[in-house]
Amino acid sequence: MERIWKLEEFDGDYIIVPTKTLFCPFCGEEMLLHDYMVAQASAKQGGFLHADVHMKCPYCDFWCVFGVPITKDEFEKLRKSKWHRKILRKEILKFKENMKEKLEQFGYW
Image (cartoon, rainbow, N blue to C red):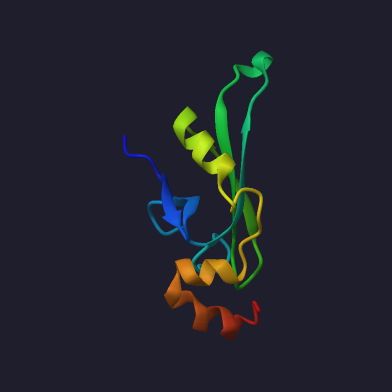
């Protein structure tokens, strides 16, 4: 089965993004990456590595979290990234150039 999440280089570092466009279940707008963080579950829980990816709708403000299992290599790249635990506001516009006009229409910035 093909993964729905992938690492992408962005501005000299890494972020985790969906391989397909995700749409808001309430208003149908395209969801945007808001931020992410990586963690390791406790040994009691199996010690697996994962990324919590927060996606947000720029129109209706719906916000959701995806728990994404990741490899050790992906964990290290994301943990060391300058984007780790950083809310992406204006930076996401560089990543998704075509979203700027739409976001301004919605009053996102």
